[in-house]
Length: 289
Image 1 (cartoon, rainbow, N blue to C red):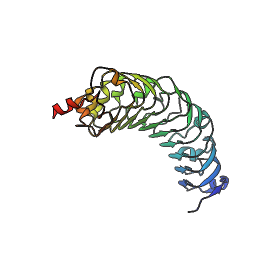
Image 2 (cartoon, helix red, strand yellow):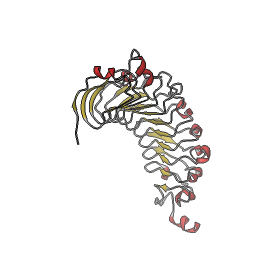
Image 3 (cartoon, rainbow, N blue to C red):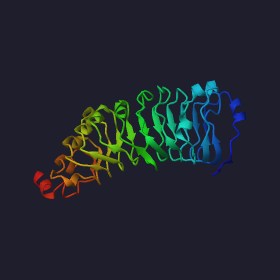
Image 4 (cartoon, rainbow, N blue to C red):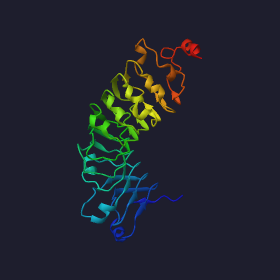
């Protein structure tokens, strides 16, 4: 298997006026990423290399600024401030993936209107500061992954984040978030993955976690390693075919057991506390059979 090394000379590539796809992933290239690599480029994949920086998206490159749909710079060693990278973003972009880098700083409070953006993934970086709601920027967002930040965000999950009605994947695990999960989570009727594990969240779980659109779409509910308390809503046990992960919270501190249908995994695919004898007493399970 060949592994390309060195840096990319971008100037000659801009003469390739019909080039629509540029993929140099899985090599050992270094230096700077220039995503607007050719006038008609739609797909630019620089993932899994050794790039250390990313140039800003420049509006003067008029054609490529309008044509770029997908930019993947994941699994590199980019160590820049997030605001510098995201100050200007091509307006028609659909996927922006920059996970597994060393990008630091705060996300901008708002981004340019991005009506076509479906995937925004900056997981496993060093982002910090407040987590923006992005409601004006991401009207059609389907996947938001900002999980596993080494520094972590401060404060709660913003209310506007629960208003992204098209979200299918919301992963904010391992990001030092505080506060509670509000009943607004019920707005996310097409959500398939909700992972808020390994944060500093607390309070009771809202019944709306199991009521969103009848609960038909959710396949993963990950809330492990937080400080949730109170009664586990019986509606969560009605999440058909879902994996419900609630370990390492404080539910055992209450005198209430978990819903029977959840303990017996009658409708869910998996409940990681099904063997907990406090929440799921064996004698109760036997009597139900």
